[in-house]
Image (cartoon, rainbow, N blue to C red; front, side):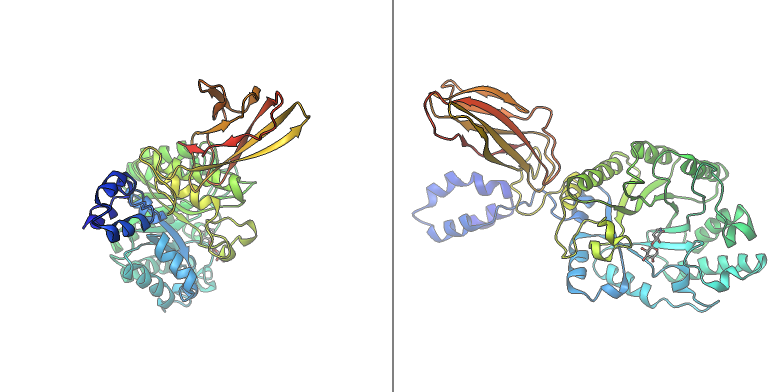
Length: 462
Ligand code: XIL
């Protein structure tokens, strides 16, 4: 009875101490059960998909049909994500390897897997110069036009009602400063109008699917994204159907997350299209990678029309850029620092985190070392490490034994209690720590004859 009243609300488990005292003698068994409860985090979503859903977004992964039978792969997908994109299975070479003969088997496997578990599906991709079967490139203009329209119509009709957004055209613009269209069979034989035609055909085939233009190196404001921007503005002005822009967002040290990422998302949104982050991966590791991931997620959440994020794979080992370890799970499906940062940026909190109403999941640890000792005095260092979520401030009590005296403190802001023995050190410039990241502060102590080492209290995060 008592159990059911408190189990569902995590915070009241701890607040129940007074209640426990009152019922102790009469309800020992119930009390035991109550005390043994894990610290529930029911107040904060503890998976990427659930946390994103609370923000009105989806959080998806690119998946491969031939991995769905791997237990850990499927378990991670099913637990963490609420949207999928077939990584290769809906590309032209997979769906229509020879003219007019469609093979939907692998793509259907992914769609069925998703639908059976309440996940949504992104369709990727209808018209693209890559992974295009040779028979398409060999066609003359008139044939190519009807092959393109037939491909769009057949595929979208097959998946009608099952796909929330389609990448209708992928990567049609050139890299670099020209803002020109990329050479491809479609561009070269049908001219600029092929994109518009593809979108019109797509709208007719499935009027309820969102129609996206998807590309890479269009994540910041640059010549290529300017060209896409001009196209979208023109489409909107002329009533050509387009609903969304896909920013692939493949990042690495040579192509980092642009500082104007959010501004770029916003300017597309302001044209009246949704923005989806469609193929996110960020090469790197540890805190640096986590920080980049956090920045991407926060940029998306800041723009109302940024409606969802898809990462381009689940564990690093299956990434198309595996050597860059660009994903959220390591090769053994362990959650990387980037995972925790993403979850926290989405407003979620890893299970097991203490949680709290102000900053759910905020937690840190503090550890002490003496870095220098000269007999009459010593330098102490306290390392603060963020737990499973990003924190924006920390504090810790350092208790000295009289008559020791602290004579200086750096990288932290100290205050003392009345006795002068307990020093509370709060973060100064170094309060923001990504999940798993650390910082340290230091202080110098005059021993005044006492050699007891300082004692640390618990770390408090905000
Ligand atoms: C990649 C897949 O991840 C690889 O497995 C495949 O070998 C090549 O294509 N832009 C896109 C995606 O739009 O379709 C690409 O996916 C990555 C770059």
